[in-house]
Length: 130
Image 1: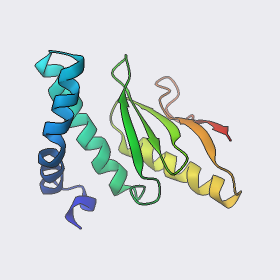
Image 2: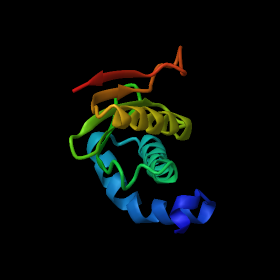
Image 3: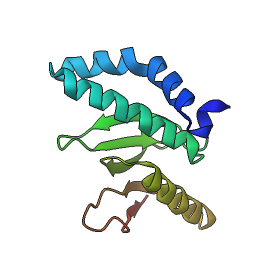
């Protein structure tokens, strides 16, 4: 599927698929057109990266939140794991998320939350187990 390749055409397809919905949602919160456009572009990029790292089917996203600081967080999986991603780029953070989930799965554990948004220590992941 082209959307999983992360190419320009896939991004464009995702952008046009979700832009009206995200734009209307962002409009409810702000009249700032530049902000809405940035949120839309970053949300579509997040969805594309999420599919690219192989989490789309394994841990489906149920919610995407834009935090007060402009960072993103998601709720994913059947038990709505809270994942704080912070600001883009997302792909490397999502790869780390996959590694964390793989490791926890081997231990038969599930996280309640995973924080990947530590700007001072981007190598650090904080996890709270259920």
